[in-house]
Amino acid sequence: MGPFLAFKELWRSKGRYLLVSLVVALITALVLFIAGLAEGLGAGNIEYLSKLNADLLLYQEDVEVSIAASRLGRSKLNDVMRVPGIIDVGPISFSRVSIVLDEPPMMSRSDDPTLDVSLIKVEPGEPGEPTVLQGEQLRNRRGKEAIIDLNVARQTSLQVGDEFTIKSIQGTEEEFYTLQVVGITDSRQYSIQPSITVPFLTGEEIKPKAVVDRSASSELDSNIIAVRVDKPADPQGAAAFLDLMKSRLENQVSGIEVVDIQTAYENTPGYSAQQGTLNTQRYFALIIGVLVLGGFFQIQALQKVPQIGVLKAIGAPNGVIAVAQIIQTIVVTTFGVGLGALGTLALAQGLPPGIPIVFTQQSVGTAVLSLLLIGPLGGLVSVRYSLAVEPLKALGLGG
Image (tube, rainbow, N blue to C red; front, side):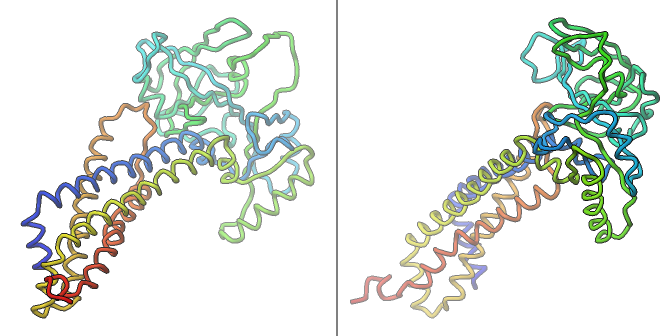
């Protein structure tokens, strides 16, 4: 009886319920876009660090795990390698340069046909160098070569074997350098920019410099040092061994701070605040959804008081009325969420590659499940009100 009443009313008032489903669809689109933006911006900040082929990262001491402030001299590499349990180490440095393009990148409003990228300097074959999907790994320390990530490849149409030009500021002058693409890796954004990975000495030559001193012979330094350790295969044993190695490194190598990969990317400037802000917006959108649906079904219940009174007067139990209203809220919510999800994903396919929106199974699944719960949750108030309706008062016969 309950399902019959629910679908009968849905059909007779389909325009009204369709309008509410469209409101749910809009709320769904808002929540999914916020979730996609959180994933995209988060990945743009931490993607390179989160995919590092390393177990621990070494920072300069007292810089609060800030990559930009950290400076570690070349001599630290030998000190780290002497620590028992270390398999391999690799210095990593970061800069920003521009790729000169034949055509302006999409979404660019500038007449200057360049693409800003993160320049990542690594030692070939050491931790920090990304694994290529196409082409070869870096071949020598002074090679004029680069591994580009998929974002660079998509926005520039560069392929393995192509040459491209880097623009870098040296002092007060623009300098240009030619590199060859030897490999393409997966998406490795850093600081919300696509990345190119070059040999360390090549990167030292082309990185931007405030003052150019060609006679300087100072020690090369890096922002961080990536470390691989001889950890056991057992996850619990591996975690304990990493803690041991952190203490061992900090005790035996002076002037460093050691953190795991997760701690490193969670301390990326702005990452935590950014994710907190976007998650707050997502939660508010869900609360708005609960209030909108709750208000709609409460108004529906107020308008149906006489009908509910008639049903109760002829012997309809409270369970039938409750089931009918719950089915209505589930159908309206499910239709709206499905419509909003399909529309959002279809719209996302047409977005330019420069917009940092990424939909993952986990983020979309969590958002959709949360949205499917807001209908029944918002409708509980109207169900409770309907169950409290007195038949005689509803029909105007009560004293």
